Image 1 (cartoon, rainbow, N blue to C red):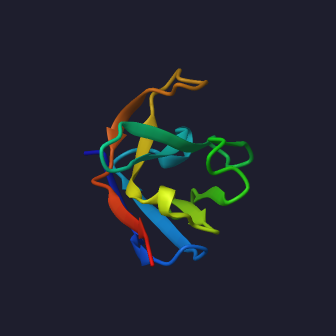
Image 2: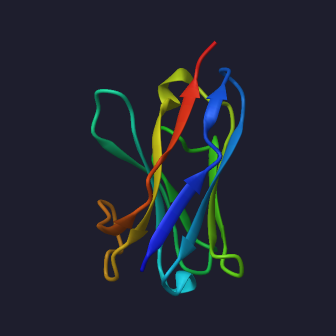
Length: 123
């Protein structure tokens, strides 16, 4: 059974930092592209970032480029998202998602999602 479990969300002040984690199990983690997707209140899902299998290639949405860093530890079956210089507009439910085999470019297709972790940026 494929499982993706996010953690690390919380309430932070503007300009603060947060590190999200996604623990994966039930599949060979190192063989899949992995993504972070977020959904803000009243809005649809927004792709945030993707990382290829070895971790050497990454892509980011323009809205987070230069502030967020995606990484993975294949030995630990864990995906990460380091978020710096957070803004109120970053407030959203953040999901990790497995990218479908054969989905190489944006918009990516996903076959499994985690339950999400809430990030709230507010004073």
